[in-house]
Length: 340
Image (cartoon, rainbow, N blue to C red):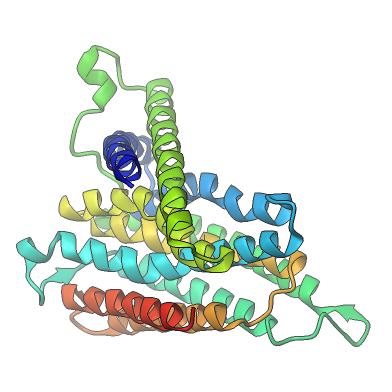
């Protein structure tokens, strides 16, 4: 167990360094392209850091182990566990990171139109994905689940178009991406241009993937010692191992007062993983409402609806609002661990 803890500590250190490198380069990219913080956070940061982890459920479903049933359990758990973790634990940790500086009643101020758009798309997609669990495979001669999968994919592309369309107006209103610090590579005498920005992005992302993979290995070893089932492992452990470390980006941004980038990194990833990945799960797995899965679905939607309601308040999101999202994750842990 000591070696596992040492590996986890070292990999988290790598992830922290990588997150600094990645967010620094991403801010310079957004500033150079003249795009809004919403696009930088919800699309570039969210998709860029989520892509490596997207392979986990895909590879599992396609044949990660010799057992098809185990493959499906790991795949479905990883697909549904990631949005749960992002909407509850990640947002709570982001709030905790500014609790001392802002206080429980302190404001969290992401650009509201993009924040609301992200949540609206995620809620619509996740309701559709949840409903698919209770629908027959075919209806009236149509492959109903295939239709739902296509709808989810189209929903994400529609989301991309709306996010990009809103960018120009937001930049004009003062919500453009701004890099506060010089690019790290320029500190060693390398000029800041498109090539070096891409180079630093690649370096940061590469280190993130390396750190996340090492973290996954350590967590997997630890979960094996605890004797967890494949489904429980994929619902609880895999999302924490694959998603949570890379959401350090959001903690770094919110501590710098870049709330739009911080929240966009989380809510954009929720939209990405609440549309494209469920589309794969619905099409390629039985997609059945088992207890652990159904409870996770319900609590994920509750967390998203809570944030959406908070966004509609006159005074907006407060730090204590995010603490309640963390309580939802604790509730999920209590429910699923009590039913093992």
